Amino acid sequence: MRSFRLVFLAVFLGTALVVAAILFNRARPQVETQHPNAQLVLATGKCAECHRTQTPAIVHEYELSKHSAKGITCLDCHQVLKGQESLDHRGFTIAKSLTAQSCQQCHRTEYDQYLRSRHAAPSWAAVAGPKDFTPEQIAFAEQYHKGAVDRQGHPLVAIEGAAAATKGCVLCHAVGRPNADGTIGTCTSCHARHVASVSLARLPTTCGQCHMGPDHSQIEIYNESKHGVLFAAQREHMNLEADPQHLTATDMPVPTCATCHMSGLEGQHITHDVTERLSYWLFAPVSQRRPTYLQGQAAMQETCLKCHTKPRIEQFYKEAEAVVASTNDLVGESQTIVQKLKDDKLVPPGGFADRLDYLQFDLWHYYGRTAKHGAFMGGADFVQWHGFYEIVRHLAEIKEIDRELRGKAATTQPSHVRAEQPRIDRG
Image 1 (cartoon, rainbow, N blue to C red):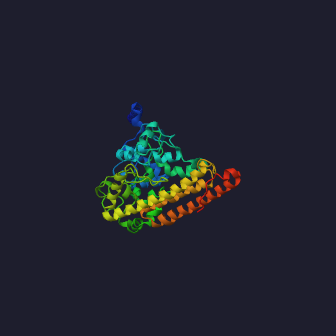
Image 2 (spheres, rainbow, N blue to C red):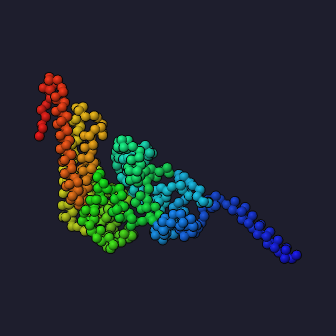
């Protein structure tokens, strides 16, 4: 009988404790019940119980990251922030998708610098125009890049269709897509989601995911250049994981894209504004100096001085700027011919209306840009055969079309009108 009482008492007390725990837990604030403690969400803890089986690679990548080494948990990044949509995920409340706001909790300076760059709003507006941005976002971006956001989206998007844009343009230009929470862009375009790697962002191939192809051949030019050849030969000796605040030429004796455009090599100013060290609008049909020409040139040449003497750097810039001037002349000549044909109503108005428009677009958008980028990045073949040769070849074809159209127009007009036409130089 006594044994029965003891068992009954133990069961009663146990049940009472369970009920009390349930009632106590129900009274806790929601933020406590929805967000487990930090130890439970380490990649070696609660989150990894499922993700090691379902998505094992992301757990492995996280464990390789500096975030893991510093004790940053999954929930530190995946928590719901203001303006973000929440998701009930197996007892956890997490953000449905992460944005730049998630990263700027700790990396505010880097985010602010990025916002001033062409990787931010101007990148998305180049495809979609200004419609996805708030007036405040447009006004901010226009301070630094006049006309780059308050503009029409690229006409090729409408011509090629949504499928091409979604799997083509958007995959690169989304680096500057606005988010519902009021931020812009995604840091993982360069750093990757779970490894959050500075070494990945320093690799030329990371930049080359977007900066490649006929309209901006930076990765191909880099690989051809002496810088690229040396990087391929010495990569195993380079410390790509070096702390950005203490980066030395011993860590990075050969420059990558990030070294020249962003890094704090040997005490330089670190920046996530990749336009700070540029001196020309090289992407434009006719390239003019940026308003910050002198500052940009000085900042870039400060990097060059880590390896090269000042006279060599000055000569390099003089020759590159001569390429810009020559390219401008040839592009300007093609623009004048095409515009005159449109003014005389010999070809349809607007852009991409006929073969002539595509020829003229290719001339500056592919080959003009390539020649200019090749000149500033040390790619001789891209200056010549992928650049100037194609420019003059396309210009010759444009001139031939001009002669044909004007000759045809002259023969179809009444004689009294033909007599009034100026003589066309067929040379």
